[in-house]
Length: 219
Image (cartoon, rainbow, N blue to C red; front, side, top):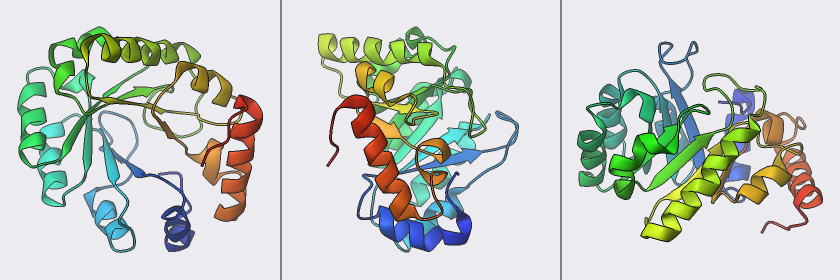
């Protein structure tokens, strides 16, 4: 959502060699007051990339979108817990039956307890550290406590999900995020795409920022 669409191919070709996966925000204008990407956009990425793609569904009717993403073989399909009452088990099973991975996303104010009935079925849990819907929002540091909680639950019960954070991952927040210990960082405008007009330079700045703030070198 935050990449420069004028340089779409250039940026994707560079990121193919540096990133681990792509995170595509799909917004319907109802669950959040914004409209962004779509399954069509994932198909466009497929033309020039073989990296795994994770679709983040910020929508009020996830069932409408899940089958579309299954049809294009999107590797990760991630749905907001807040709209899954009465749907969670059916949609997770539907994703798994297609040989794909199911994820759940939690808003900053949503507790981990909401997903405990089906947490053992999940392949990924994403913790929002901003309110969903728009780039460039304030980092909500307290949401990181849920990452620690999820790590402890995974260790205690042998759950298989990976833990991802989403929102304002940048120089100012890298140290605190690293201390919480997610498996996957999502970087957007403030952490990557807005650092320079060149994606190569932006990537170098991001890597330097991370190293300086955490003392760790990413490879």
